[in-house]
Length: 59
Image (cartoon, rainbow, N blue to C red; front, top):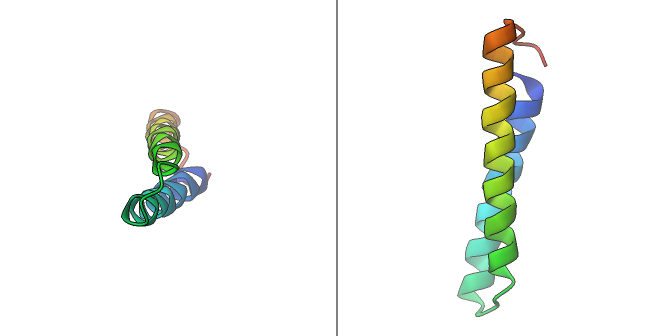
């Protein structure tokens, strides 16, 4: 898996965890974290598909 896709997936997982913590604490800031998770998951999908099409798996 390409390095940028792994970074984006890691960011997505961290953003989801931050959103859960924010919502548990009663903060509406979690909405920002959810949006960031969506953006980073789309970035991961893009980098994965781009690497698959070009045949580049190292980054």
